[in-house]
Image 1 (cartoon, rainbow, N blue to C red):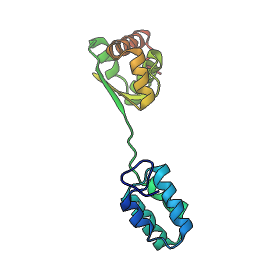
Image 2 (cartoon, rainbow, N blue to C red; image 1 turned 120 degrees about the vertical axis):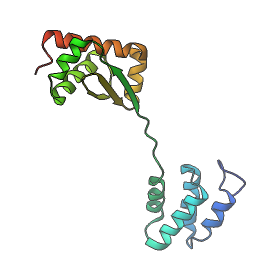
Image 3 (cartoon, rainbow, N blue to C red; image 1 turned 90 degrees about the vertical axis):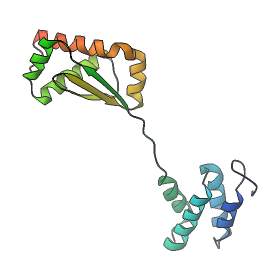
Image 4 (cartoon, rainbow, N blue to C red; image 1 turned 45 degrees about the vertical axis):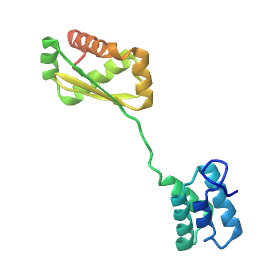
Length: 163
């Protein structure tokens, strides 16, 4: 199982760390984890140290080390301006919670999934994860600001901005 590089084999640095484990079954479990979880030699060293110091089962040590890997979370942010002075004036008379409720209605009306946001008197900010990014692409990034503005104007004109 030991050869140069990664992928189908356990690298030499990882193998050197594995021999520090006294139990052959523990070595086998970690070697399999190297292949299935793509453990680096530094992670193998962490697994071995955790096993030696804590006495816990090797699979638990592997899961803890894998769980320490950084997780990248992609967030999407969209900012827009409120340019209609009538809308700006109406929004100025609302408290933040009321403005945010109006924006939440606009988000639903436009069909933006997974988004939340804040509505100020002159700007709005939408934030979300992958689902929001996908729905922005479906709606069309170039049309979102206009659609939100139109919904805000409708809300103000219909008086539904006051809950």
